[in-house]
Length: 246
Image (tube, rainbow, N blue to C red):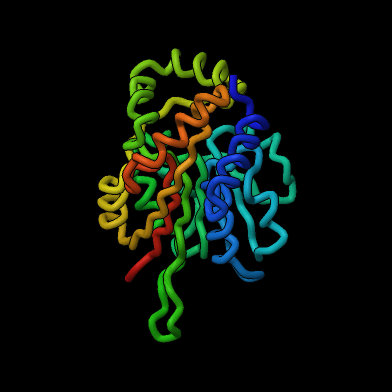
């Protein structure tokens, strides 16, 4: 079993080996923080019980969280955040409402990502060329389906019951927080096509992380060695910035 605290210990070891390395969560947070201001209207998709919005909500003008799981929203760790139960495929907001939309560990679960990207585009603020103000940003963090570990786990899309049992056993995660995966928006090619069709300009960051198979010191050393051989575009995590264009 690899609980989060032990995985973070291995991440610290990896950071000692490569001081320039940042985890995907650190990269995601850095980009979101650089995209907000006290006037920002922020929407977090799939926020559930919390996440980055817990830290950022005092720094923006409006913070909202949307999730289909009402029970999770009722348990949200930041009760003063505006919380709505709903689907990302049909966002209950007017056009041009938000400056920033965020989503961490959501895209891999989408069965209809085209609808979600179209809705995100709709609710994001349009660019204002006369003032030089760019369009709103969709910032997301998701696994890369091309990474070898994800390829070997791809069968979980077809055997969700096995996934619900296997992931909690391996990573000490509650079964209630393990959701079926689709991997329909989890490669460079698919994300580029989704953004182009929706009217978004995409920038991707590829983040390595050899700790997911670090069940022992020996496996950690092996994972670090394998990680060095994996091409950049196959790294395990994707952090994306999709900007609304005219």
